[in-house]
Image (cartoon, rainbow, N blue to C red; front, side):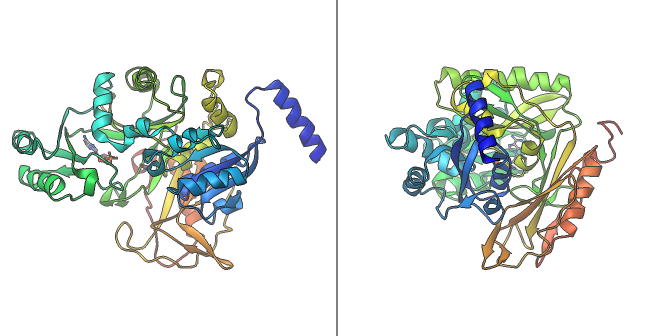
Length: 453
Ligand code: AMP
Ligand code: GLY
């Protein structure tokens, strides 16, 4: 069998220039990383898979390494020790902090394929002001805005006083998903603006503030894999950020996701490609940005007209849990193509079924919550469903909760209703203290069969 596989692999290698068998290190520890690990592991090109630091789910797909996502020195030492040929960076923090540059500039690691942009390009996520200036320069439709610091603070106050409501304030830098404030009165906006700039409410991240107009419509996300010059469009998705049923309560990292979206028709897709994706990639090319990796574009669609809310320099979580399982291509082959600037040779094949992810969180999340509770029923399975781990860890012979978002059930179905119900059913087979999940992910599309009511 081994001999046979070797023969097959060497045959493929001589036939397919993108075929390389390699050891891979994936950085991160959430549901996104378990999903990526699950998919990478299916590739004949993935020899050994390592995940740093990973969770109790990723250790079923490879070997977890107990290294922090921002300890570049230890990550690069691990790459050398384990003969890693590809480094895939899941979350934004190491990218914004320059992991890609660190690896490229060091002779010992410069040969490693890196999936994730340079620090300069990662500013598309790491600095709202940078992203807005980029969008304006390349005529990507986005909300009108102005940026302020301590220097033009007074001007900012005047801007807020004359701005229609609601007013959107954004801390320029990364603020753990908390840096966006939607203010319904001038008074509130003035107070928040002062807190951000004068009292460092979000630390250094908020010493610069972008003030922008409020967009209405329906939010969705599109994803591309780019090599900085070419790109492939991946399946679109919508995530459900609020903790409560019917999109109520506090914002979370994401309580569920749906893909595909019934309203993402050919006309909208064409507008998104021609007005948003193409100019964005053209911008990367013209600015000569080192960008080999995923671009996640958050959109607001109003009456069929898309506007960009934000860029992220990575995949979304829990969007990955529906997007990646719908992709039929070999993921390592896709990433090798991106790393070698060969994406024009790739055609994405997508599963036409609907995928719905439902996230199980700890009681109290997104506020204070306890962790360390044993999780029961992890061997639950259903045909057409997957159970990904997010905040979990192995403690002795038990898997315990280890974060706000704990597990993600993804199911396939003929429509949103079917897939969502199946994911809920799967989570009902699992238990830990104070398990919470939304029973209505995809609610606005339920009852739609093939996009029709
Ligand atoms: P972000 O941190 O940029 O992902 O923004 C968080 C959320 O704030 C987005 O997902 C939107 O729901 C909302 N948001 C951000 N900018 C705007 C805007 N200009 N108009 C309306 N909602 C917005
Ligand atoms: N689900 C939103 C994000 O990953 O930022």
